[in-house]
Amino acid sequence: QVQLVESGGGVVQPGGSLRLSCAASGFTFSSYGMYWVRQSPDKGLEWVGVVSYDGSNRYYADSVKGRFTISRDNSKNTLSLQMDSLRVEDTAIYYCARIRTALATGDAFDIWGQGTLVTVSS
Amino acid sequence: DIQMTQSPSTLSAYVGDRVTITCRASQSISNSLAWYQQRPGKAPKLLIYRASSLETAVPSRFSGSGSGTEFTLAISSLQPDDFTTYYCQQYKTYPWTFGQGTRVEIK
Image (cartoon, rainbow over all chains, first blue to last red; front, side, top):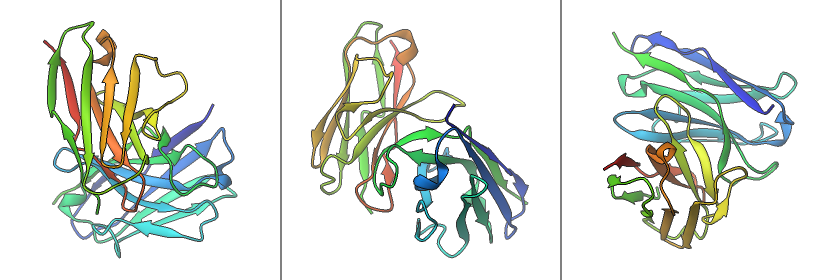
């Protein structure tokens, strides 16, 4: 079935780095833009960024721009989020998500991963 | 950024009640709006896309309406499973943004 599974969360000190992965299965991964969304009690649901279906375009929230990098490997059906210079306020559950329509740039999220917890604390 | 404002933040109702949740956008988003349901410890689940289109396998007691800046999610007859949290989200313009959530609780 269509599925996204995140991994890589954990505890990291402020200023540290962490890399999250999202394994996709059950659909043609290379046809869909892929997204990262995070959720914390303080800020609620927050869009982090997107990589286009072919990896040619990326957009980020201002809060993570210059610190986070989204990439994808269509040969391995894998999405990644490299997080550098982490701050306490980056503490959240991180979800990868797919939008409904292949090759589209704007649509609702129909498939979400289970989420992985990132805690930034000294 | 487009701000999404949901009201109310909390809603108390009985099983069988009809309830509505409102979401207002700070500028026009046409019909680029989705509604999600989220249970504790789980990822959000898509209910409505394009403001009024029901996602596959979502019960017909859920409906969405609106366009431009004002949108509504209605639940026609609340079931025990429906007492949880709901979010709106705009996907018109990056950064996509979410409302702060509405918790539906049992009266």
